[in-house]
Length: 299
Image 1: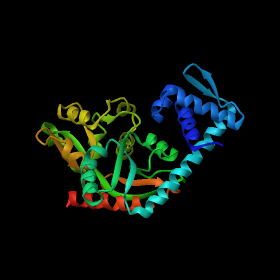
Image 2 (image 1 turned 120 degrees about the vertical axis):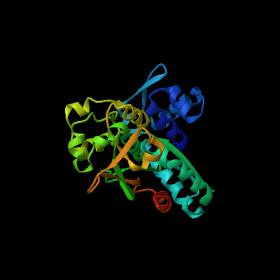
Image 3 (image 1 turned 180 degrees about the vertical axis):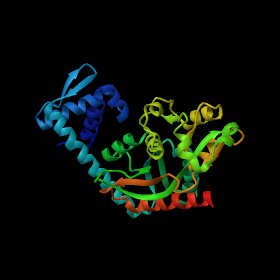
């Protein structure tokens, strides 16, 4: 009989396509994992992988069965999640993904409030870019993600948390040259410092400023907002900074923040989960917690 253990091991192998990496992910020895894969092949009567030393390539049957195994394991996780609903709201493990332009600025307060209000909750955090978070959420590796909305996927459900307006960050010594009523005109003439490709914050900045020019796209692509703010302070360009990040990233002696005069650009941050998840009550409770935290921060 096919077992869930065999399916978990095969799922890990299908993703890693390497026995050693899959064994490490499953916290078992490589021979133990290999033995379970062979047992699964014998049970199904079909070859699942082509073995090339430690690495593997899935056969045609292996690819099809890997898709089914992923779906079955996802349903098992949802079943466990549904059972946890009866243990009380926000208890047990929740794997939460967050984008880098949110995690450092909101996570410490979230963890403190969770510890105070929901001590039975084990909040496990994953920080990476939006596309990867969405992929991991759909695969079932994450339970929910905190990203900028909207998210375009019919399998996912989202609830808005709060709006985060953008400010223009400029070198303090040069701030006298900036007039807020001419911000967009000024921005188009300056070097716009952006995060590297793949960060949603980069795309949002280009969209809001309406400066998808080659000059803007060729400008510095930094891995962190901290690097960008140091560049701004040194007079090497300007950037659009989310208000959420301002207190932590801005040295007010070296950088001046200029608000947009009317209808400021903003991003809407939200909590996203799979529609099939049995933990919607947990996610709504977590969303309420985050909303209340943000309201207290901006009060």
